[in-house]
Every structure is written in C-alpha cells, then in structure tokens.
Length: 116
Image (cartoon, rainbow, N blue to C red):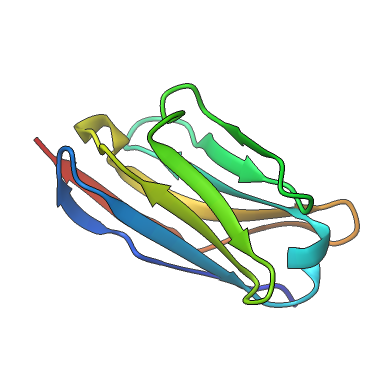
C-alpha cells in the first residue's frame, strides 16, 4: 500500500515563498519518479516538476527558475520549494509517484493561494 501525504500549502502574497512536502510510504519512493502537479479551477492538471530516483529533474516552463524540486531518500520525502510566487500559481498541488513496478499514485492535494 502506497500513501502520499502532502503538507505545506497555504496563503501567501505575491513574491513570497512556500515549501511543499510529500512523505511517501512503501517502496515506491526509492524506485520511482516523484513529481508535483497542480490544477487550477477550470483547468487541466499539469506537471509542475518531477525528479527521478537518480535525481534528474525537469520543470514546467512557467516555474523554471522559481521552483526547485528535491528529495530526501532517507526520509522518503520530496519537496517543492516555491519562490517568487505569482497569483497564477494558485492551484491545488498534488504529489505524484510513478513507478514501472508499483504503478502511479496521487496524494490528496494541498491548496496554494497567492494573493496579488
């Protein structure tokens, strides 16, 4: 059983920062890619950032240079450091785990609201 538990969302003013955390249970963390997606009202869910088990990262163009994804393998936790936040970053952010062995899993989502 894989569980992804997110934390760290909230309300912040434009230009501020937040750090999201996602704690993963089970073996998927060490054998899968971990990612953050977001979904704004009326929009499709989109990839924000992803990090592989080897540490390779990729980012959406809209967040590159402002957001940083990282992972702590000892703690089975993935982080998303979000700086220079903009109102258009407002969305529900979801943690994602993807493994060819274990399949795909989603967290429950955490709300991020950026006020102008």
